[in-house]
Length: 457
Image 1 (tube, rainbow, N blue to C red):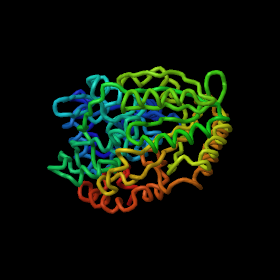
Image 2 (tube, helix red, strand yellow):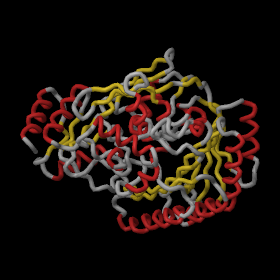
Image 3 (cartoon, rainbow, N blue to C red):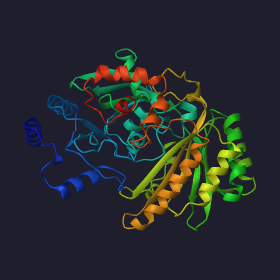
């Protein structure tokens, strides 16, 4: 480590800032520190040092010294990136997870969160009748989710998380702080709305709030023999109710050992119409209604259910994007579900339609504005069960190849592997040129080289 970095580490320690590790402390210290920071235990992690930043001035200090030494930077905000893309040898990691403050302003219709804020932190601070678009898991960092796009169960009504961004405070590569907003730096705001990391360190993000006192939600499961009909019907319902209805769905193995299709509809429209729709859905052949209820949005999350996806387990996640759930695509998904090798594996689908599909393609960096479904193929196993690794990965990779023949080009960049550069370029398409122009303005030396801003170049 260069002398300037040594001085920085010393100065930060004197200020009470914790350095989780630095080069020279030994491999075991490094391993423990990095594993405590990231989600996927299967990734071989690397870094030059890990610095905890509890405030914006600390972030600025670290960035300035790193820039002067030419040391590349990466940011961990939630630690939920399945591929831990910033954790490579040579990178200095800025851990901003302690910057998790939340300030809701219902009168202004917005909420401002620190760069390390998790979904659970935001939901806990919001009034019951107000919502913003989050992902589907409480432990996911909201900043990383939003600047990469951000699919959620409220997307059809209010757009992506990226569409909810009003402004952001960003520490740039020279250590200065920029405000990205329509008034102060509209280009940087455009890039942060779906352009991913690589522009700087987001220390604060302001998102739009929307009134939504209650949402009608349910969970239904279907035997695989009924899955095709159920998914075709779900596609038809989404086309008829593109804004009011969302379906979070996929395939998993229930405790009894049966592989099933699960569908979790969310309805934000007229109450009588929504109840009639769910009643009709529950009466279809093969349907098993697990629950149906009106609740606040925050009550739709289930902390206990998320324990099925624990931090530190070994994960292998692949993704494809489908334009529609037609018969051919569904056949591939159902057969893939039949072959799932272990009860811990799953296939997850996120829908995109309604409000975000009406946003012009060039209005944000997030370029895919046609109706579609993002598919997550998730294999995971316990660290001690390395014998299962080959079977699990082979299942996921076979299904990924099969879906590639019917999928759209590119893929959701928050989920792609670091090696899938061509798919990142395909996703951004014409937006890539503008993204690179903004990247070169705010980070000309490519200091934040682990982000999507580098991948499109």
